[in-house]
Image (cartoon, rainbow over all chains, first blue to last red; front, side, top):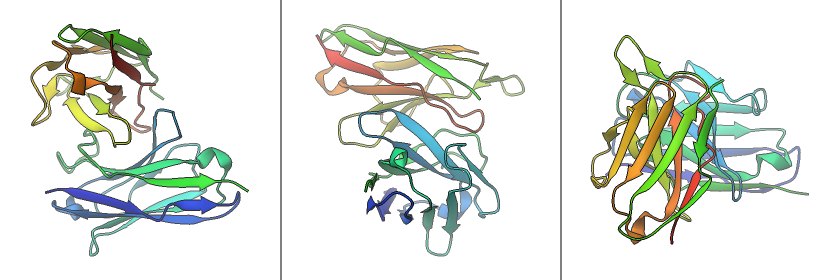
Length: 122
Length: 113
């Protein structure tokens, strides 16, 4: 059974930092592109970042570029999102998602974690 | 960037009736080399993560009931639920995965009339 389990969310002050983790099991993590997607309370889905299977190719939404860093440890089957200079508008549930249909970058997001809530507030 | 626009924003349909949700992309998501539309539909129930329903615009994900179907090509797409069941109450999102940013539509909230 495929499982993606996020952790690391919490309450942080504006300007602060958090690191999210997503532990994956049930498929060959090192073969697939991975993503972070966020959802502000009561709002829609917004793609945040992606990373290629070996961690060398990363892309970010303009809203987080320069503040967030995606990375992965294939030996630990774990995806990360380092979030710095956090703002109130970063408040959201953060989901990790996989593209395990194939090793290319253009596939749908077939598996999602349950999400972890990040709240940025004084 | 691709802009995905769904209509309507909300929809109320009677049990057993057909529900139809539309999605329009600002640019074509059809890749001519393989004739595939890079368009997916997701279902999100309250308190749950999104679930993939349809990909390549019309291919049902494994385990998805056959009352769900996707159609369209290029820039205009439709998700149809042929006979609405109570468990289909959810928010539905379209998404293009042709390139980053992987944009989603704003969502359509489906309720029972």
